[in-house]
Amino acid sequence: MGEVIPSYMSNDRYWRAVIYLFKNNAKLQSVFTTKYFDLEAGTIKITALKRNAAPWSSSEKFMLNLALHLFNQNNKLNLSDMDLLDDHNKKLAMEAIKLRFF
Image (cartoon, rainbow, N blue to C red; front, side, top):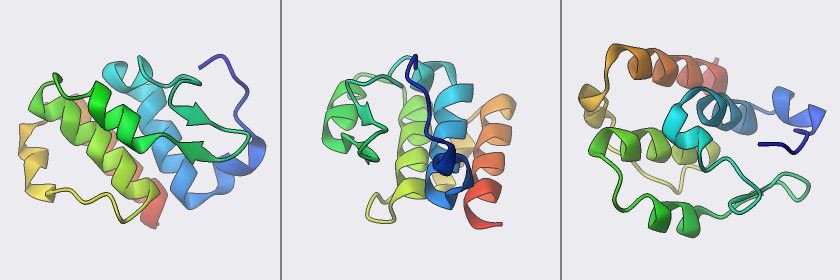
């Protein structure tokens, strides 16, 4: 994302996990754009992101759903689907969970 991320977001437990995943996962990075994120307003276009992700693999969708769940608990996911992830993405997921909850 070419847009500057507001400094308060790095201290916000909801945003920092989302930003971490979207910056460090290649598939999520590809949609970390102003088309889906309005950082000034602090919003994510969740429905549009999910629609765009329809053809993605199950593991890619899990990473998106994890990011959205960490942002807002209304976005449910099955944590057991973490089994779909390779080692790199499991590490990203665990770090994002730490950023959100610890």
